[in-house]
Length: 199
Image (cartoon, rainbow, N blue to C red; front, side, top):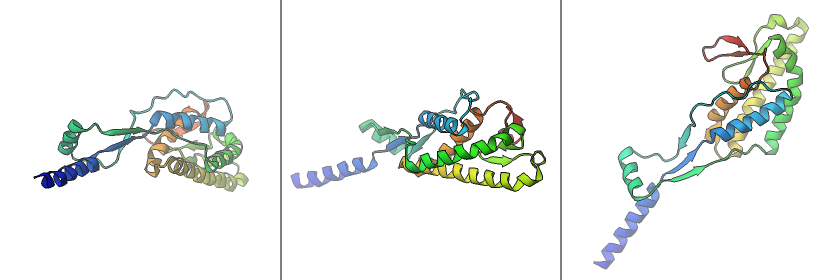
């Protein structure tokens, strides 16, 4: 009888251990603060209002189980939780930040004139090319392309540096809001309906 109990007990123990859910929550508040620090370094000027509310903190669940199994296991074992922080101190992030800050000095006059604006997904676009002299149009298009490439690389690198590449869309969404929230009055951005609005 003893020989039967040990394998059964070991099997049950392994089953319970395998079914423990690790919930890694996306640190939305930490990501917002990190975004604000980077953006204000890039802008290098008096910020706009930075008190735009964030949507409720989103969560990323790994190895999510069906509700009955999850509820049953929660009755026996509390699920493990891991609250992650956002690190933005890698050399790659710092290099991208410096590149964007340098480029911003060239883009700033076009933001102010309304020629350039920000899209809903946090990218930069040529809003009204009539406001750009003909001889400057190729230059501004090149600057915009490089800026958008660097922004995409920044979001990927932050997610990668924190060991969660799957966080990239959420990091991008937070930055999209914070670029606009931190922008000075008078700049143009695209609202959620896709219409251009001046701050």
